[in-house]
Length: 389
Image (cartoon, rainbow, N blue to C red; front, top):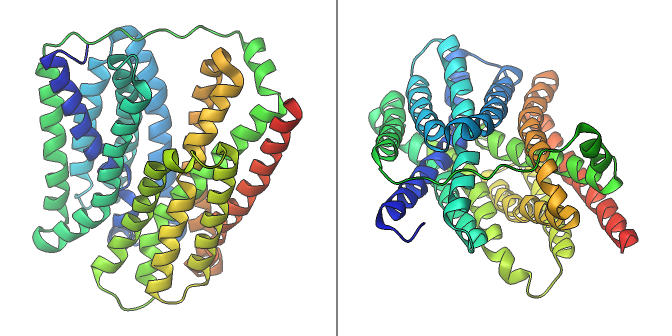
């Protein structure tokens, strides 16, 4: 399918779209200091914004599956890009209510587009799915790394509202071009339905429960670190806007670098060992962030945290799929919902703790504890796998 010129054009559009999705997906953290000042939010109120976005993403992910089954790939893609453009543009408006609705809309649009594009690229590349999906997520990483610098830098030059419009406009173009493409998209393959008793029987195994907990804590730790680091660096002392805008980019760059190098690392060590080493690297980075009193060591800690967290989620999912085989398709949807919940809960807890103790440094204990819990959970998972063998 991907060999045809029209299909290749659609794939190119989706990769460009995924770069933009990476920008929007990580936008809230870098602009959080601006939104907090505009709406006079304390850290608890700012943390609630992550809950709003993640709740929208969970709803969007659930809707995407239903829409694909009923209408195919095209409607959720077009709707997702359109809603993402409108929601991003409306973030520039002053009223708090409009901002909350816009943040919810960005989450909903991310939930509509990310699973749909992943599934579509997979269906268009039968026989080379792993390579195709790695390339797709590399495009997301380009957006995640560039967005935290791009938007604040544009805001200084042309204003916050115009900067957001510069992100929204290409999203509209991508949506229109995808809609006008005449390529016949493949029909999504329907997974085998599982009975509730069958799914419960799979979930009550120690390995499944431990993996579910690890996914929740891992994505929560990632979201809390990447989401709050710009605000934390800003409060360390007098610094340029570029300094705290660069911090999230360093985190996502570390994540991107770690995932790009993981296949080469795996030539020398086993998957479980690589994940454990990554967790200790991430924990050391989180400790440096928590103890750092100047910008330079904190930025080093940010890069280490991203690099160490990089292999945890994809390798955990790969091991989970290998462990359950065909039954994994019944369970992975729940794992992604738990990932969304982690992305909502952990940043919210950081804001809550920061407001309670009067210091964001106190709130950053949350991802630090998350790093420790991940090591414990992974050790338990390794023990479970060894006992199975």
